[in-house]
Image (tube, rainbow, N blue to C red; front, side, top):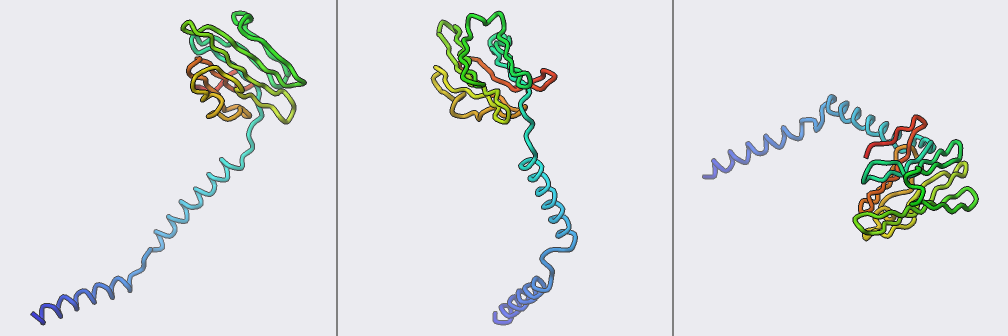
Length: 173
């Protein structure tokens, strides 16, 4: 019994000695980890530190029928209300900041959203500032639109605010 115990102890001691002698990582492991780390650092720098493209335009879309309610052109500092929605949109202007109130009937209920748009150079943005929807996700969850790849959606009112490029193409939501 003692001989068997000493034999097992000797084998374990040999395994521990071999593990201590072996390298934890080979040179190829270290090169692979270094390459992955370099790729992560480059991607982080590209996504975090790349400048955002200024807003070109903005569309407010009625998602019940896909029609554009309102278009804003930031380069020309103009807006255009669709003739189909002229009765549904009111505009208040303070300097270069506009508030567009969009009111329309949806399933027998009056849906109202207020969108604030700034046309000031260097401070162009669009944001939802009021809505009579039950969740207010369009106000609380979505950030202001400040670049060409952003959108705000009011799901209960089926209204979408989407930034557009100079070619008039918006992002797809």
